[in-house]
Each structure stands twice: as structure tokens, then as C-alpha cells.
Image 1 (tube, rainbow, N blue to C red):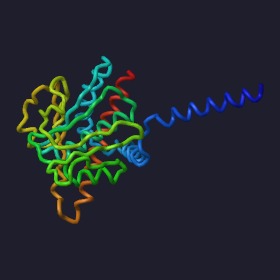
Image 2 (cartoon, helix red, strand yellow):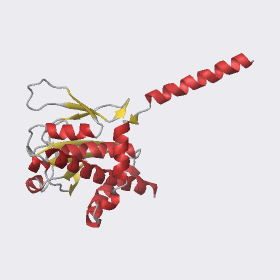
Image 3 (tube, rainbow, N blue to C red):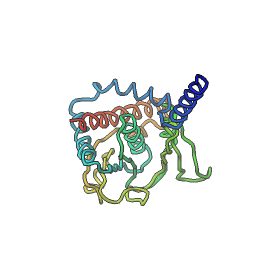
Image 4 (cartoon, rainbow, N blue to C red):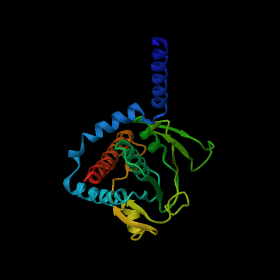
Length: 236
């Protein structure tokens, strides 16, 4: 009897270890980075928080109706800020255990996801690899932020690309140029303007890495705050 009991316990432990092995978990450095950003919400100015809360309100309504929420983050070239926004909104949703939220990015024109953007995301612990030919002028990247979870794909595209939702999505415009060009975002249910300074201003200068890291951190902090507000809102 004792032997059967021991065997039963061992089987139970092995089964639970298998579950843990295949349960998606944030990569350690990514989790640490988000834990740090979540402690910085007081750094966000009150006026800015109001704008971010409006974004969260849209998502809350969707979540309460158990509808899928699709978000396209838009800037001119879909090269820097829009990719930061897409990545941190998606990871922020995962961090707070929110489901049925999918994020995308696009531009008013297609160029390339800037390698400096990729490097900044890699520095915080996101695993990113190029899945395109070395001479591809618009390379495609696969980004992994959690174990046993599907990768995100990063590449430059127009926001109207078939790789993005065509109808019923929320648009977040993160640069003044795209905001001016797109007073109406075709197919969007709602449109928000949340501008960020372009880190391009420091390209090829000694401040380049610092500027990209600061912009990455700012966008991570604010997109995480959006998802924090969503988490709180759907509990009410």
C-alpha cells in the first residue's frame, strides 16, 4: 500500500511539473523590467494620465463585453515609436493577465523597423531574431517575451496593411506627423493621439543608446499604466 502511495505522489508531482514547464511565463529580465516600470506610475504627469485613462476606458468596455480588442499603434514610418507601443501594450496585457487583446503597428508609409529599436528591446531582455534575408531592406523580426508563448513579429508596414486589422480596431497615433496626415483612421472605432518624442534625434550621436533606452522606458511605463487601469476597471 505504501509503495502504491509513493508511486501515486511521484506521478502527481511529475504531472504538475509538466504543467509548469508548458505554462507561459515572462522571461526573467522582462518581468524585472516591468516590475520596475510599474513602480514608476507617479512619474507620469496627471494630464498625461487622463489621456492614457481614456485609452484604457475603450479597452475596458471591450473587455466587459468579452469582445476582442485590437489596437494599431501608428507613426509615420513604423520604425521606432510605433513598434515600442505595439510591444509594450501586448506585454502589458500579458503582465496583468488580460485576454483577447492583440496589438499591431503601422505607418503612413513603410520603411523598416530600425535596428536601434530592436537593440533597445533586446537590452531589456526581449529575445529578438531576424527571420529575413540579410539583404532585406525591410527585415522581419520574431520577438519572444515569455516562455512557451507565440512570438510577436515586428516589421514596417502601412497601417492599412492586410497584416493589421481592417475594421473595428482602436488606433493610437504616437507622432505629430501621422496625427496630421490621419485626422481619420480608416476602419478605426476610436482614435487617440498619444505623442512621444522621436528617438531618431540622437541617431549617430554619443547619446543614441541613452535616448532609445529612455524612450523605450517611457513608452513601456505608459502602456503598462494603460493595462493597469484596464485591470482595475474590469473589476468594478
